[in-house]
Image (tube, rainbow, N blue to C red; front, top):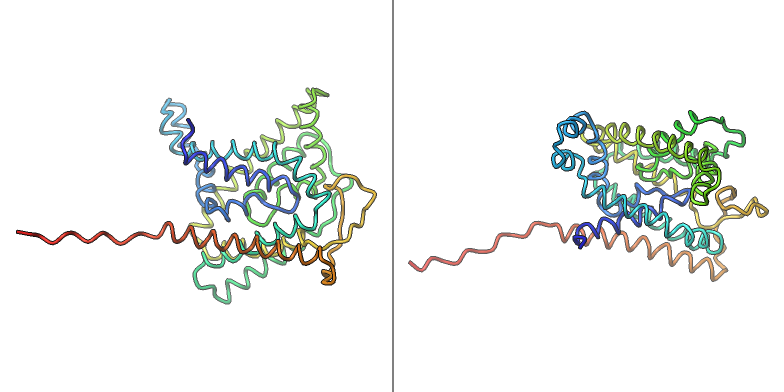
Length: 321
């Protein structure tokens, strides 16, 4: 029987996997909302020489404890399940209820940025300057056009995996969108479909293996750097992360005009952000969903802080001697 704690982390991974398949939404943001972001970064960063030495000396328990294997394993099961089971649902929602779906994610990310500000304590002017720089950078990045003629070859897929996986653990930066910008999204998803459909298995499997290898190198290296930043420059790192989240909201602004109506694939579509038409019922429904999603994040944050607050020690009964 699976322990209740692992079931919780499987559920968290499920939500992260569902978010990661949407270009513009980051699994790192979901981890931040759920309160497991720092633990995730720390666990990944511990795939190091000490971990390898433990494996070589067959100290399996020490190696597992080093990388928080129970936590990571449950999370990975959930992420895989989320990607597999929610891909079809998200595809339908993005194609038929795009405005309402983006409204929910917009509210979630907007409220999550407030959590980052709270974690920084009392933000100073320097905090907001760094946040503004991060926001401008993310705003520019998510507006980039896709590469129409990207390089080809396994080396490029390795490089794309290295970069995209780093984005996936950053709140506010979507790894799926990074793959779109680099022109590798269709190739990777196509390779996955080919393997599952038993078509062109050898070439497609080679592409997936090389891409996954790039992901492994990227996430271990970058997580160490990110953990170092959080340990030594915590408020500065939080400021930039907050800015990245706010700037990325450009990508999932709910009210858009489809500039490529003849393009059947959502991942290849391009949109222009519009001011909401307040005369439409659909607009008010989207705003209600946005507000509800943001409120849910704030309530969950308040609840988690209350539930983890240390309780005062119980009074000892007076001595009767």
